[in-house]
Image (cartoon, rainbow, N blue to C red; front, side, top):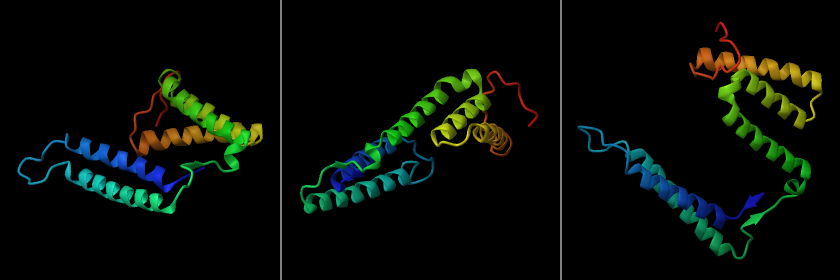
Length: 156
């Protein structure tokens, strides 16, 4: 899929305006001439300037379609992979607290391995290892509180 310069310029222009508007709600830092809004505002101004350049170049280039679908996007298998990814993200959002991180991660990884046509035995082993490694890294090294759910708390 390819977006035209006009489409990207319009998207980034809206994002830049939204960021600039939001940055004004950030609090001021006591004793400083600038506040927490300074850097987000600079980023927003940069986004607006770049989007203006994209819009200008898109308008100069002529009548290019706003969105062009590639051959891969017309492939039903590729669309099924995208839909599966979105559904698995929604699955994690809605069910990770009740069943826990490790079972959710195993289900998600195993399903994605199946979509990628990995052999079942290899997919099962890799999904289990990946879930436990991710749990260890996030809980111990990064100190991220992950939902336990139905799993007992692991020693790490």
